[in-house]
Length: 167
Image (spheres, rainbow, N blue to C red):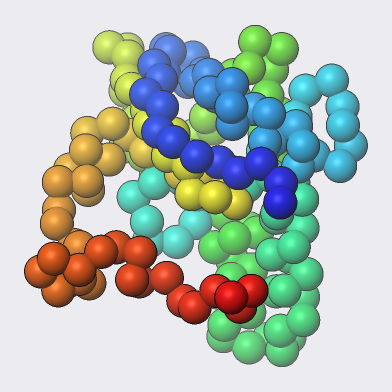
């Protein structure tokens, strides 16, 4: 299995909207960029009703695009996915210092319109993609105890996993 996006990293966003991608995430992006150029690229998705950005390797986004292409042309589901995953996204190149520039739409999504006083972002790994949050929004989300809705008292979180087909 390929390397995955794992962990959480807090990074400063500078006044020019640049943010450093954590080194472990850059390694995954490099492995998932078929061009294998001097610096990796990342697909930043700002569509949908989320309060964060979802970021994909080029290889992972290509898999998603193939799945969308197999859907019924003109169906509401396909149009929704095309708009929110394809139209409302951009491919961004990581610079030589390991940073990306957050475009205006991405900054708007995160609520980072004013960068004069700096800002802090959180990179949160979620296996095949990572999320990019504004720090205060991320911490507020973490403070909500949604596990209470999923797990009865005392039940282990691993019980939520589907059965292992190899067992």
